Amino acid sequence: MEELKALLEKYLNENLELITLSAPRKGREELKARIRPVLLRDELKFQLEIFRGPKAFHENLPREEAVERIVELLTDVFCQLQLQADAGQVTALVSKKGKVTVKEKRQPGKAGNAGVKPTSLAHNKKKRYLLEEGRPVPFLVDLGVMTPEGRIVHARYDKFRQINRFLEFVEDILPALPKNRELTILDFGCGKSYLTFAIYYYLRECQGLDVRIIGLDLKEDVIRKCGELSRKYGYDKLTFLQGDIAGYEGCSRVDMVVTLHACDTATDYALYKAVKWGASVILSVPCCQHELNKQLENETLAPILKYGLLKERMAALMTDGLRAELLEQQGYETQILEFIDMEHTPKNILIRAVRRKNEKKADTASAASFDACTEALHADLTLEKLLNAGTSPAESYRSRRKNTENVKGESR
Image (cartoon, rainbow, N blue to C red; front, side):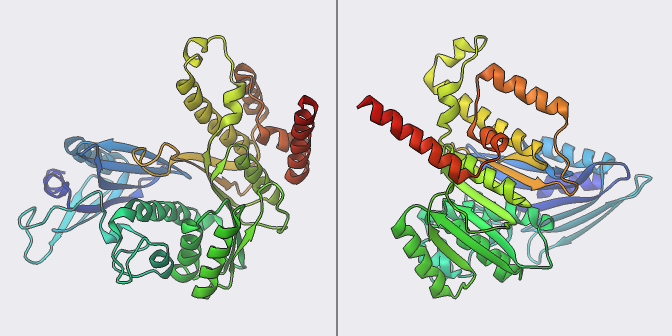
């Protein structure tokens, strides 16, 4: 391992592109691991992402720890390493008996770090993106993210990274989607539809899948603009409709539901609809979780909850945790992941749910644990009520709206 360790110490710098660890040893639950450089608060770190079953676990490590961790993983967990960097490529194989075979292929004219211009990690290299910089993408040009030559507009680089990050989540769930028929994807609260167009472009143009995508939003002008762009590009299976999440009844079967920054209980209605459709995949970035903030009470936590800001943040995290657990109870394998870096927005949690093949729901003990948790928090979430009532979201939404209007009328 000493030769490999020496190569890792040479290549682990800002010019590293990606390290992939694969070929797990017999009996290990880990599937693969990826290591890439990241810049956190102006400090170079190496992000380790380990995949165990459908879940991913992340660590951000300094250089020395990253080297030791990779060697450790190759000793105990994985048999193969692939390293790609500006200066060259490294392949390593570790046999069952611990024999290490290492091959290094240097790029012509480059040795180690010499002569290599450091990469700006804030502007990741093209190779890391599913939508590459330098290759013009029509909708990104019209949306002001790219120039006609394919260069990223400096002020829109965060949006470019966000789009690619989201497509990485989509790439990960492709095995969960049917391949032998047209796929239907709904994007609730699509807004300007950066990600809606990105999903369509990636799945249709890059992956060659037969998909139909519907974007739904309340703003008439936004929907009109997105519809015009869709027709301009010839995206005949990408349509945009005006309407609210709760009242939408336009589909009988949906394969994937996307809901990004749907405010407060609008997320609950979208999740409920996804469950009732039996969607294979749900990707949700919640926003403005006010409902639990108004309900949250706990005598033990009272010294903390008296601070409004802390209560608001705790309520938001607890809301998403409870939503994830409710999806687990409905037969989904659910993860809560970081969508984009916290420095760009505090609304950075993504709930990713993939329907289990056997659709096994949570056991009685899990349900009892959930009930005990909601009772302790005085939580009565819209999603839980919708799932328990079994009514359509539209009926529940209209009923709650009518009750609110009646209360307002009585108070006048």
